[in-house]
Image (cartoon, rainbow, N blue to C red; front, side, top):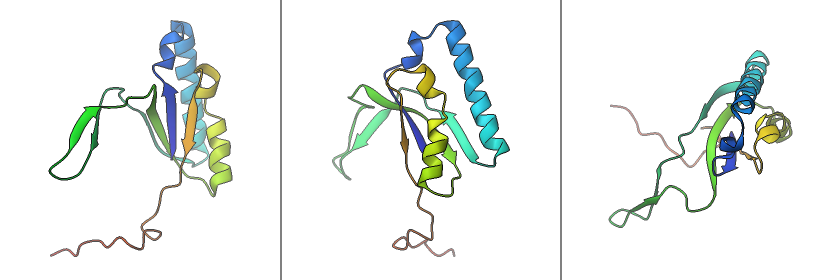
Length: 123
């Protein structure tokens, strides 16, 4: 999973022409991932939200994020290993357009790797 992180709304500093170029470059990036069989899904995320914390009976729902950095989107990719995932992430147009852009590269556990989880039996 590639988690796209920005500080605030980095795209707001782009001119309309730069925003359009950024979107076009993202489409090329996505089309290349699809062509190479490396993309399962990708979406931007709405910047507003709530952060839920606590435990049953003592939940808090505060502001989504108190820091300047927020996750603004994700790419669910297919990579043979972490090195390939990092190479894919480095090709993301975010780095060319957004000051301070960061991409967090995280493996997703498969059911086989999550041996402590037991699915409930159906009735």
